[in-house]
Amino acid sequence: MKNKLVLLTNDDGVKSQGLNSLREEVNKIANVVCFAPAEPSSAVSKSLTFHKPIRFFTINYKDGSVGYSTTGSPADNVFVGFHVLKKKPDLVISGINYGDNSSIHSILTSGTCAAAFEAAFNQVPAIAFSTDVTDDAQLMDQRGIDFDNIAKISAEIVKIVLELDWPENLAFLNVNYPKEITKDTQVFITSPTLYKYDNYMVEKSDPRNLPYLWLWGEKKKSFTENTDSWAVTEMNGISISPISLDLYRKSEPATKMMEILQDQIRKNLI
Image (cartoon, rainbow, N blue to C red):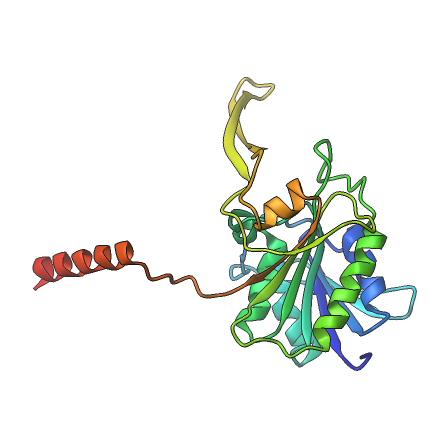
């Protein structure tokens, strides 16, 4: 197992507790090389840096291993890793994110999941790890989470995945943990719910009395059974969602709409 190469990244930054706890645990079973953003990069989605150079700097860990801090996004870090390593790893893991990434809205917004998406686009298996936080948690101050315990569980998941054949149509696994994990915590195989927050803008004034906006939101009170947010929020369980890259879904109403659209375009263009 130690001959397996794992690329580790995240979106909370190279100094985050979740990243470093995960690195220490997975390093016990595989060869882990960390490539992570120098600064927090939450909610940047799958951004790639085209308009400026990406800088990368070596990190020498106490255990003698080497990692890298970069000025790029989480998705950038996957490409930086491919370049520095001179080959693709056996697995990309991203996290442990401070804040769960359940729901389609969060998956498409998350930098954590973006790194897993980028791995999938490059035919590399990937897992995104995230954990729910308390309502009074502050993203800048990662408190109240037992990252060491979550990292141990995550390392077991990584070990199992490295021993299995990766399905052809599977992009990545999206793993979300509840606030607290006990021996009674259940594991659910889930599908993503659509969204978990009702988002809105808060408008206020700065000291110069100029208006500014701050994006905020309230978490929904209930979710459809067997979805990721339901498992984490309502059941206090661990959610594992298999994520696909297939964004196309054919349905009868959609097919009828496409036929009308195609017909109208032909009439107007020909």
